[in-house]
Image 1 (cartoon, rainbow, N blue to C red):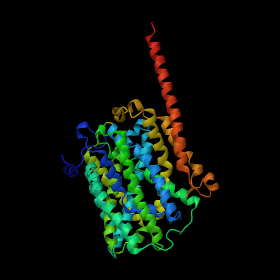
Image 2: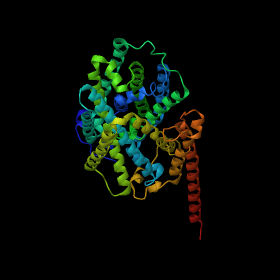
Image 3: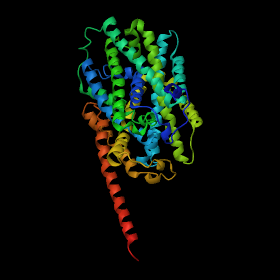
Image 4: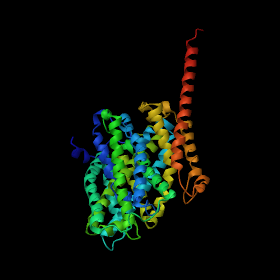
Length: 472
């Protein structure tokens, strides 16, 4: 079956392992799915925070965004090899670290994340379409972007991959066109390179935002690589995902920083429309359509995670495409309601939302990657993921759950947010280094405790076997 034929078929598989005969695709598909899905307005808006909220000069903003995306994407891309190897969604694989019931703690949080990002993208898409259609509110645009994403999410894996392949070319060309228009047609302000001053809080905030943007993709990655043949290989999967997500995020973020400095005091979406002149209607429409790829990914992953949550509680349940479609519709309705109710205070809500992700995703990704690469070396008993008792992984892995909660708590002194600022962050004039501490502490602590527990279990097993072999 050709790629075009695959994209027009509604996906049959859901959270069960993908059979070998259904595996398809190459590492190149991982590049376009992450490159194309990031070329959207929300990425541009996020880049604009570096020069507006963080008040950095353009050069330092670009440096901070490049560093943070380059570092953060390492953790995101390390999850890419898990899909081809195990053939299951990322949240199903989490049962291998946390146990069947213990994984629900993470799965539930991730579902909320998907709905939050979906609502955020809908708001930005609706706002841009309202700028094109004078006199029209954001609501019709939110509905249009939502319907496009709903259709793609229902058809599933192959249509989303096809969508992002197309948007990689279309949105990529438009991104270059917008940048050229702003620089050579509209022109940059005389103080473009000298406005703002380097400040520690702003640089740390920009680095944290970019790194979190990448780390937030960690729960997605295996969902879009699990159909790949197992022979795809860890290195090709890593590098294709790494460069796709790094470049796909960094380039529009740099454009956002440029718009934030070059446009009059207004939000980044309005600024982009103003600076691109005659190109603006086309740019806003294309970037809005591109947003539908990202919203479809959030819907699709949210549905898989919701099915994982339900199947954990009812182990005999084998959800099919109808269940996935129904759950997709329910999640869409929830995100649509959040977008319509929160559109008037979007930026404040969005900033608080990404800070929340900062504190809860970092410990999970540290535990997952340490377990996969350092402890088990990619070798898992996949059938145990679907057993009622959790199989060899049990119902609750107290070490993983404890380390996860510890990883959240250890970040608190370093947190700087509108709701709470820890003592260390306060002493550093509001600089937030919580994600660095979360990664640096959680991974090693989990490695030591998990390895010790496995060694103790092995010793106990050997003692029991020795006793059994002794003569009466």
